[in-house]
Length: 424
Ligand code: ACO
Image: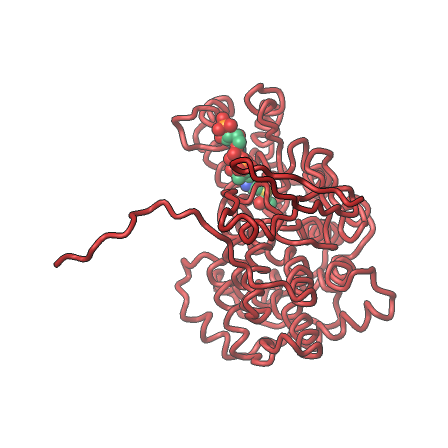
C-alpha cells in the first residue's frame, strides 16, 4: 500500500501521496492541493520545507553531515578524483572511462576560445567593478557570440554548449582578474590539465614562464570539487528556474552567478576574509566579535558560520580545514588572520549560543584562507566558487531540461490593498 498524508481543512479531509526518495527521504506531494481544495495553497518563505524537484544528482543529509555526488562520498571524491572527472559525473551521471574523459577534455579545450570582441565588453567595465558582476555579464554575453546555445531541444547543440561553457568560463575568470590587475589577457594552454590551465591563465606573468606548484594544483582541485554541487541551493535553484523558461544554458548560468554573489551564499567566502581583516585591524579581540554576533540588536553575524541545511557539521569544512593546514604549511605561510580564524572557531564551538543553534563553520570559513595563500584577491573568491559550482549548475540544468520540468512559478498569498478606485 502506498503511503499517504491526510490534511483536514474545516472538517473536510484530503489525501496526498507520499513520495519516497532513494535515501528514504519522504515528501508529501501537494501538487493537486489547489485543485482539490478550490484554491488553498502552501506558504513556505525561503522554501525551508519545500522540495522544488526530484533529482538524482546530489544527496545531502544535513543532520548527519553527509554529502554525495551521484552516490560517491565527497570525502572519496576530494581525495581521489580530478575536477573534470567530477564534472563529467555530475553532468552525465557516471564517472567517465579513460576514453570518455580524454574526449570530454579535448572537446572542452577545442571550445575554449572566447571571441576577441568580448574583450571590448570587458574594457567597458570600470576597474572598480566587482568581478562577480563582470563574470555574470560576460557569461550572459556569450549567448550573443554562440547563438545555437539557446537550441535547448537539440542534443548536439546542448552538448556543445556544455563543453563551451566549461572551456570558456575559466578564460573569463582569468580575464576578469587580470584586467583589474592591468595584466595582458591571454588564452589557456591546451597541453595542460584543466586545473593547471586555470592557474596558469590566472597567474602567468608576461615576462616569466609559469611554473606549476603541485600543492596549489591539488588544493584548487579539491576546492573546486568540494564546491561542485550542493543540490537545490539558492544559485542552483536559480539556474533551474531560469532554465525552466527554456532560456539557454549561458543565460541560466549567468543568473546562477548573480545569485551566488550575495554574502549569505557564495559571497560568504569574501565576507569571511573581510571580517577576519576587520577583527585584526581592530586589535584582534575575537571575544568582542563573538559578543556582537550574539547581540540581537547588532546586525553583525559571524560570517562562515551556520548553514541552511547542515545542522551538525559541514563535511566540506572538515576536508577543507585539513587542506588549508597543508597549503599553509607547505607554502610556509604564517598568517595572523589564520590565528584569528582558529580562535573564533574554538570560541564558537564552545559557546552555548552557537551550540544551541547548531552553528558550525561552513566550507567558506576555510576556503578564503586557502585562496588568500594562493595569491587570489579577496574579491575573486566568489568567482572561484562559481568556477567550482559550474558543473553542478550544468548537471542540474540538464536534468531539469531532460525531465521536461514545467516552468517554475511559485504562488503567493496577497496581503496588499484590496480593490480601490483611481482618483476621480
Ligand atoms: N552568526 C550569528 N548568529 C547566527 C548566524 C551567524 N553566522 N547564523 C545564524 N544565526 C542565528 C540567527 O540569528 C538565528 O537566531 P535566532 O533563532 O535567535 O533568531 C538562528 O541562528 C537561525 O538563523 P537563520 O538565519 O534562521 O538560519 P538560516 O538557515 O535561515 O540561515 C545562513 C543560514 C544564511 C547561512 C546563516 O547561518 C548566515 O547568515 N550565516 C553567515 C553567512 C554565511 O556564512 N553564509 C554561507 C552559507 S554556505 C554557502 O553558501 C556555501
